[in-house]
Length: 138
Ligand code: NI
Image (tube, rainbow, N blue to C red; front, side, top):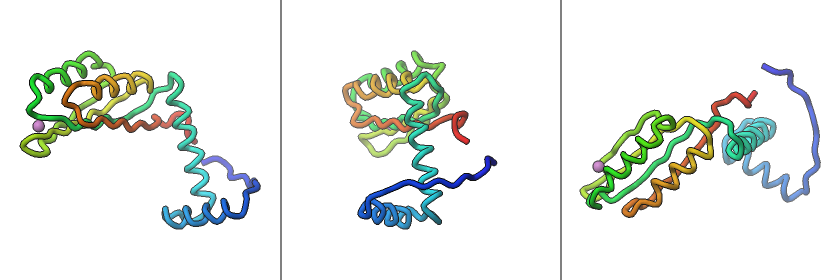
């Protein structure tokens, strides 16, 4: 583990009060831990704009009865087979399916695949969650 260094910064009083509330609400032991996580989140987000590798999941909800949709969604995953690690299908109800697709690759490619899945007629929702592979995080 790296050496811990102390630093200080200035905040307006109302913002500091809101920070204290957030730290408590999220269950952090102290401000430092909370701020460390905020910085890591920002580092992860900055990777998304670059060519850095990310891991992520696209969760799609779609209409089970929409003709040929299931084949189209599988076809898109085959087109991006270098990006797709695995997929899990869940039959949510008589009419709706959910599919969680795990990805590893460039953020821009993950976003492009999520967009392509979302644009299919009968897809009700497609949410992409990305994280870092951790190489940039200390
Ligand atoms: Ni299903």
